[in-house]
Amino acid sequence: MNYKIKKNTIIFLFFLTLFFFSGCSKYFDYNQNGNVRVSYKPKEIDSFCGNNIKEFGESCSNCPEDVRCLENETCCYGRCEKINCYVDSDCEDEKAFSINYCFSKGTCDSKCYFNYSEEFIDEIVVIYEEEEKRYFSYDEGYFDFKEVNFLSDFYKEHEDIYDFLIVAPQKEKLSSSYHYKVNSLVENIGFPIYNDSNYKFLKSLNFLSFYNSYKANLNNKNKNRYSELILSIVFHEVGHQWCCYLEGLGNFEYALPGHWTNNLDLFSGNEKNIDIMSTNQWIKKDDEMICNDINFVSRGFSNLTMYLAGFISKDEVGPLYLHRFQSYNNSSRDTWGPSCYDDVNFTKTEIITIEDIIQKNGERIPSYKTSQKDFYFKYVIVVPYGDTLNTDFLEYINIYLTQTPQLWSEYTNNKSTARIR
Ligand SMILES: [Zn+2]
Image (cartoon, rainbow, N blue to C red):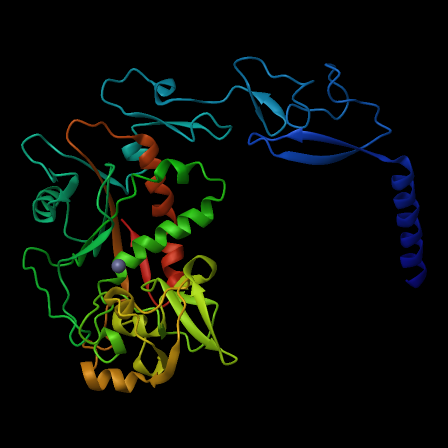
């Protein structure tokens, strides 16, 4: 056995030596963004990229100078191929009422969908604003969305089976994303009971102004990172269903509904996490105050938020730390707490337990044992009157839709599910 290993090692070293002595030539090429990429290839293969001759080992991707694709071809994974479609009209099938859609336009993975509403994205509802039925009003540069009218029209066509509507209007310059509560039959989490008798299951409409940034994000190479960021906005808005209106958490007491303040440590000194209902978060570590920037930590719901949502019991909520600080004489900063870029003098740290919170607000009813933990999400695109559907935007929203179940499980530590239907 030992002998065999030695023999293999010797053979390996022999080839390694051969490899080094044969030498490597370094050459550069440029990817689409103009970045220099350094590659190596063995020298004994006597090919030279840039001599206009297709030689051994050269392909359209490692040497586009010598291996040129025909005009109607694209280099796909080292081979010249005719790709399926560049624009939607490449997918025309001459059926009068079908909608033809080119997915991943102009790329090697492009694919035609015919009547995509059935084959491709039947989960996304597209609603067209009509001339007589407007959902947007425009007033001095500010767009307003009429939730009540929209909901009553939506439910003329759709069943009342969804918990959360995620509404993404295809319109620029909208005000920021928000949560519009419809039903909340939960007691003692800081706001009154909402009970809209028109809807049985619907909890809220979550309005997302994504259209301003979708192009930059759609073309971004790091799609996963972007969809996580965008989904954290979706989940943030959904999180307002239960969060954060408690009394007894310092500057929250009377002033600030809906978000956790920056001086409240919800993860007991753990700098790796941040609650998506926070913007920044100060923690104390080794007697030093550190600010967790939301861009560099993993996001999710803290145990306190999960308790409010009914996903875990009160016993799972660890102590929270409230870091008191010197006043700024600035009402906004005094209310929110210092952000990561502020100079701040912390004065003391208070420990707050879940019992302190329950004493001030009452225990959540229903308790986590009987509370709802499985939800249906529905994505809706609203196309303003006079516009046609932008299929790129549809594709963009579809990225988030497909990742919603998985990421929601991660954000809620597998205590809750989000299904799409
Ligand atoms: Zn918010």
